[in-house]
Image 1 (cartoon, rainbow, N blue to C red):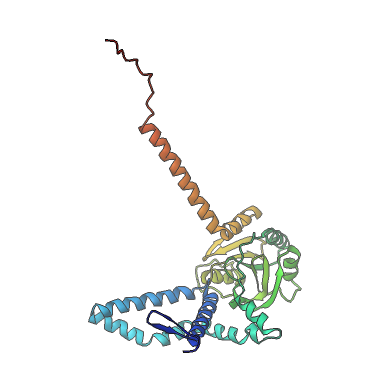
Image 2: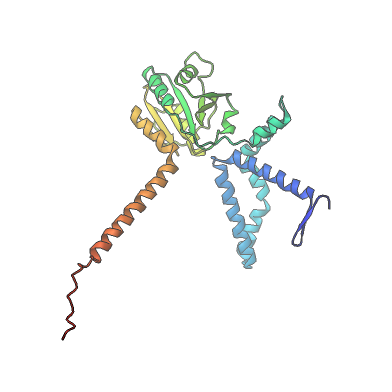
Length: 308
């Protein structure tokens, strides 16, 4: 055992530690790639099905055990078919990893482990002002706003910018004569991650006929990821937001600001709402206590005659 130690009956050496660290690193990268997409839900579905199979097998239920066993026999092939896009993009990302780029290897490794999801105050005013100007000039735009991740899958399909969000930059990107105007812009953590990104198009057939490819791409993106998509119509100049396949169209600037704030600060609003409800419930309980148990008036004690 090389530089090892014992934990009870377990013997752990340096190779085991390296093995655990590499597995944790791989697991973290897979989670970052799948986070915010529908792939994580499919993976959880497979996990639940496998746990059901283990329980059925342990309970000696022959029929269910045989059926689920046949399904698990082709489980690896089914995973490859269902996750072919995620597997392809994961392998592509490994080939483009920062470790093999120019520069210091230690700095590149450090940049992989760095966390981008800082809880900063989101600046949405430049996005709203740019959307108003674009709508006024009937200039089409497609802006993806993310609160969880920078959406590497889709950012890699376009041109990476990593620039601070500003009204002038957004207007320059979506200018009709700009080479970056055709596609979507991804905004995360107050920065424009990439432009000219390709988004998945929805397969829904119940959308109105006036919705073009820009709106269908917004719906498709919202169905696959937890993001808010802002669409500026090139024909009418109307502002539309899409989230989870739900379309909110013909929004004013105030309504657009509310939609974005509700999305970005959804968790905080939920917590504050819960605290407010709890506080009100406690106050009502105190009021009921006072009504049901009124404070008895304290009467002055009568002097006791001890002379008799």
